[in-house]
Image 1 (spheres, helix red, strand yellow):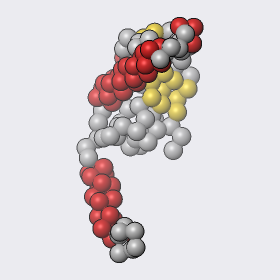
Image 2 (cartoon, one colour):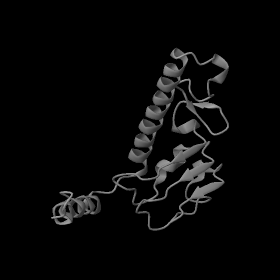
Image 3 (tube, helix red, strand yellow):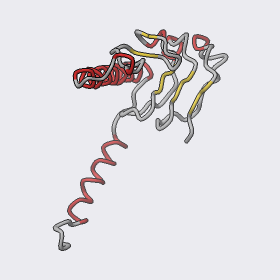
Length: 145
């Protein structure tokens, strides 16, 4: 044990257990990943609105309000969306459990222009033009790893 009280041997099993549980967790499908993404987006919008309310209460002028601090979900171009069907950028990144396969649920994203799928367990990327006809607007398909 070190002088600071930190013992690598005591913390190592926790790291290994966490890694093992992630490896052993079941994969998810696109439908559940999209639901989880919507929860994250709504939480972020609520957090931005709360932060702005606190700044306003502290005396910030209305003209300083960021466009996305109104509690609504915003596309990159500033337009408002209410669900995945009208979202232009969908980032299914860092999903736990991870996505294992691109499925037909992606066809329910007709306005999606940017689809992010990195850090998942997807073995192969399907042919977007033939398999996923519902997402014909995608021009950025990111899977950097």
